[in-house]
Image (cartoon, rainbow, N blue to C red):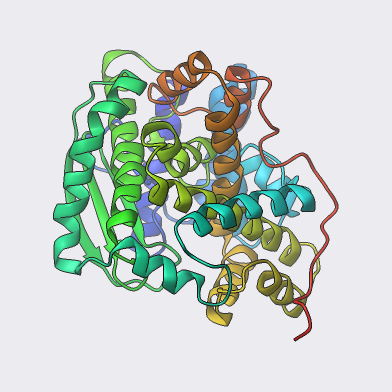
Length: 398
């Protein structure tokens, strides 16, 4: 069997094993749906042995694309089996970039830009910032949210398609969930059929957020995944056609989705202010990811979080640390958010039009790793941060 197809077969068996036991799925989006029955793998160790053999085969065949993806699956599966690699090693293996981190002065400057964007909307920085922002953005009733996010996607879709040069079709199903998890919106699917879930426990429905997430989830993730399906239908692609959140193209997927408003609606000050704030908050979350994984105490991490973000609650901070410290999937996947948004915000702010177009066309054709993104824009910032000693802050004395 061809190596790519053997990898997909192993991933489907692993996914069936995990879902049968009520664990998180392995496959997040299937770009090559099949009617063939899938037999669940007997155990995680059986999967580990199978993937190890496939990785050895990829090395022998000098198939770098397949080798890199199988390496990510092995690292994540090893973590599920109890292995805990140092954070830098784990992120290089799974997300394809190091846990370099960003200098204190850079994060502070990003925060200053976010605070200025909020101030331009009449929103002050302090314990009440989040509530002020929600009120200013126009709260929306839960029952109205699906129609409004569809309408926003319909309005903005021509601009995204023109930028990405994609004509891939997709159908969208919107459902709700009530899950104790970090996410407010989640998209998955098969082929050209996409499911968007609203997590009622976390989703804050406002007019601004729905426009932002129409770009993020529907015109980012949904259209992108459908475009990959179209690519796989038209050509015999070399890459495994099953997407997972612990694999090294998530920096691309989450980065472009978060920064999308800067490319498509840069004059919408309410939405772009959200992007500037998200950029800052993701960099702070990255600091906490580094800190909790390098021996800093939860108390020291919490003090730093409160100093950086005065409106985060103790529950919010606790969840950030727990997800990044204990969860094998999120310890990897959540690094893609700061690494991705930082690169794509810088692309929006500093790259020329030709470079932006080249990146969009490439990233809607196939999933790309951080090294491939760097090849498209060699003068861009180092993905994952330039590397800097971590310095934790303390809240100012009252």
